[in-house]
Length: 174
Picture 1 (cartoon, rainbow, N blue to C red):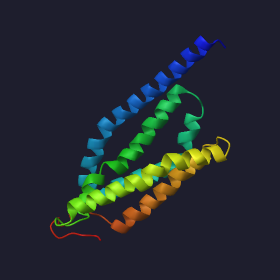
Picture 2: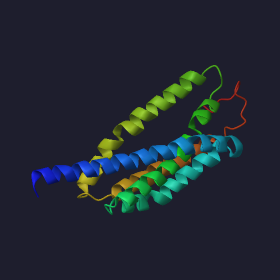
Picture 3: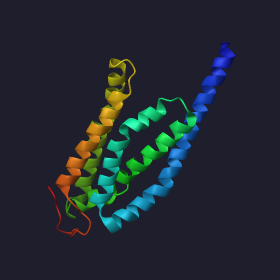
Picture 4: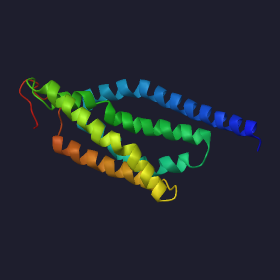
């Protein structure tokens, strides 16, 4: 294939992925306020657990859809996956705030969120890349990572318990 055609094909693939990410963002614009309101009615724990369980169930279909090479299936996969992420993300601000009493709330939430970002999200790309490279390009380790982290999230939210309706002045789960 001529270099110009290769570049054109690469640009088209990049544009398709960017469009998929645009649709994924549109899902968030709708679902984050919706799931936040839902967590006010049903509880933080129920909404979060729905997202974690959904992530476990969708971990393998996600990469099966992505690996087809179809732009439509890639777009659907990231949109569906984003729904499960948003189910966990939407109640998070309220959940974290409700875990701490007013005297330590800002410090507790900030430390917890920032440490989780550094430890959890900071090393994830490195670990994921290493796992895929170590298995010859298989996406199975990525699906297993989603399952493992979702199980950890389920255990953590189960340990924390429901925070909706807690007395915000005196509450502290520490």
